[in-house]
Structure formats: structure tokens, C-alpha cells
Image (tube, rainbow, N blue to C red; front, side, top):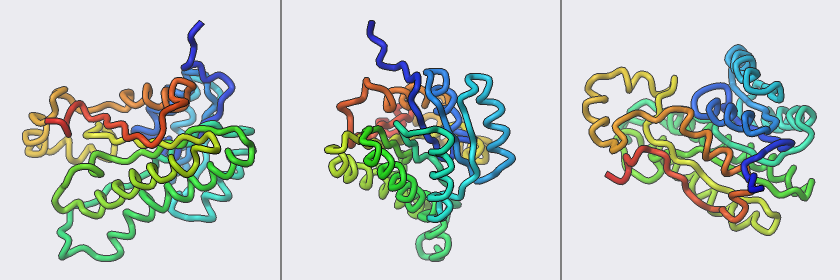
Length: 255
């Protein structure tokens, strides 16, 4: 019987798993049988997410972590491994959005605020996960949530685009470097997805009028649209897939 998507007994970590795309991934992985740990920067939101996810499975735990803090990542990762007992997949999904600002008016502090979470956070998280997988000789899957901002140009959003472009390049390099350890590394590039982070834009009539006609699918993406790709990239079905960019945008970047 062909059952490549059965994740029973496998362990996953999802940063930013307490909301948005990360929450959608966590729900799908739990329903596929995986044990899941989610990280979030806010304790109240993370606790609420664990409570909601428990409706799918009791095999979920939550931790509070600022992924831009190197020591916090190391400490929280150790606690996570004590809770999970191993690691088969790590989804570096935590990220922050950027306020529109012209390059000539951008401060170093604002540029670094974005890179701290969107780039440094992926580095710290993947480093800890790769060390664990190599130590256990288990192989595994590393997945970074980037953005279509990595492959298109958005005026006044260069700091965000820089962070997501860095992530996709980082993923390609790691895919080559870690292949001998049976660790595959891929990125997901979401388009316009309806989340708490994007709510201000999607509630703006002018934005909707300009953007929606450019989406061939004629709808915003939903967090549920990321469950399938998460299960796939954690499963045996993707055992020969590495270094790839999975664009999930309803055709936005093709039109």
C-alpha cells in the first residue's frame, strides 16, 4: 500500500507556528500523524494555538522564543528536543513584515529589524536543527518560508525583499552542503495570503482593487493552502527533492 504521506511517529518543529501559515502547516502535520512543536514570540498567542491544535492531535507542544536571539534559539531548541525526543523536519517559518519606506529614507535600524528575524532567525534555527539531524544520523527536511518578494520587485519594500531573497539563496547553498547527510533543504514562497499580518492591506479597498485582478485564481491564499506542501516536504514523497522554491501564489507571479 502506497502511504508516503503517513507521518506517524515523526517529529516536526515549526517556528511562527502560533498563527498564519505556520499554524496551517502545524494543523496538517498533526492530522498526518506527526508530533509537532510550535514556537511563537508571544506566550498567550502560542498557548491559544496549542489549545486549538490539540483538537487535531494531543501530540503538540508550544514554546516562546525570539528567533532573532541566538541564545534563546539554542535554549528553546534544547527544550524542544527534550519534549519531542528527536527531529525529522524543521520549518523556519517565523517572520516579520516591513512598513513601506523609500531607500533614501530607510534607517539602518529598520533594515536590521527585518533581517534579524527573517534572515538571522532562519540561520539560528536551521543551524540547531542540522546539528541535531547530523548527530542523530537521521537525515531530515529543512524548510524555510520565504516570499514572492524574493523573486519580484516591490517599491519601498527593498528591506523585506532583501531578507527573503537571502533566504532562498541560503536554502540553495544548504541543499548542496547537507545532501550527503541526507538532509534536504527547500523554500516556500507564499504570495498574498490572508493572515493577521496581511490584514491591513487586504482591508484597503485601493490595494484590493489593484492586486486582486493580478491573481489568476481570483482569491487570497488561505493558511490551509500550505498544509499539503508541509506534509509533502516532511514525507518520504519528497526524499529526492532539495534546493527548490515552491511558489504558492494562485498564479500571481506568472501573470
